[in-house]
Image (cartoon, rainbow, N blue to C red; front, side, top):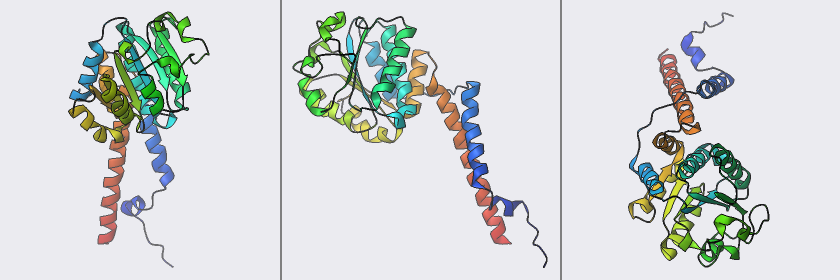
Length: 276
């Protein structure tokens, strides 16, 4: 029996998928290891988010709501750190709270990392309220008194023990809410807090959620929108502090190029073998 001679195009149609996984892994990891950064064009929605925080005065107090878990961490954690760097640079006080239980450790990690960079003191410059269940009920009742649900912080220390919290009781004392969202909690902030208490809101969302969140920006219900890893990279560019957002964009672009090349080669191989 004569064995049929295989050519290059036959090989492209039978390539082991493990080889593809290895190549994709390499093109993703290499830009991160090399610390490559990708230039991004600033979108109006991210610029609006930046200008909103830039307009705050020193000693203003903002709430950052961590409404995501490790699955969305690559997109939203760079936003958290970029926003914290911007806020601490302006001496804005930060209150962090969490409505997703698995978001507590990653939110705390980002907060403590950036606070250490800027030499911020816990209780004077920032406070971590931790996780509370009840989401919408908590959001609404915080408009009356934050201590109705958060009598203590994440370390079980009474809020009034912290100097920055002594005059903070409800949304009248909060200059801005920043919601970092992997689900519907951004809508809750807009519907239950923005409309009821006339609260200023900026949202950071995953890439797949950005399109459905834009109507809130266009209607003026939120003042800025940061969408996906690209949005995080744009914000890092605006504050001139490159981080994982810009590095991640480089890795993402390399991966997209590799995938497109595989698609092109695979299609050429298919049509060439079909002609035979």
